[in-house]
Image (cartoon, rainbow, N blue to C red; front, side, top):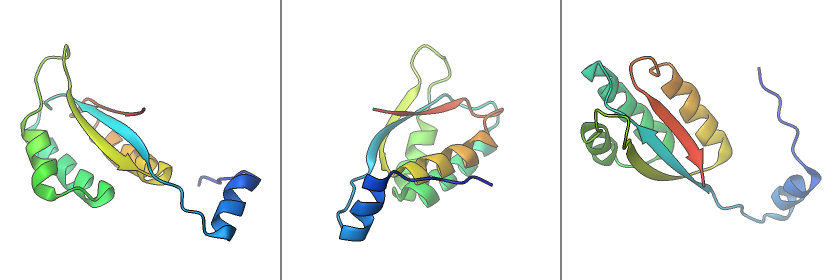
Length: 103
């Protein structure tokens, strides 16, 4: 169980109704050893990030095999979404080399 302790400024923004935009993240991935992992990762990406299923599947289908240049996808996610996506994708990590980096 994870407990989040927000800063007072964050609580005030919520109280005053000031929206906080999502952060930009870069998803980096390589082609998995198991093709079933791309199918599951595409579904997970669509469910959590809100991108179109066709876009998530196309990204997974275009992943390169060598580690010199991973496949890249930019996502707009709130921190809790990014953490959730990382947790779900880590289950596939042995089969799908993947990183999620804020920028």
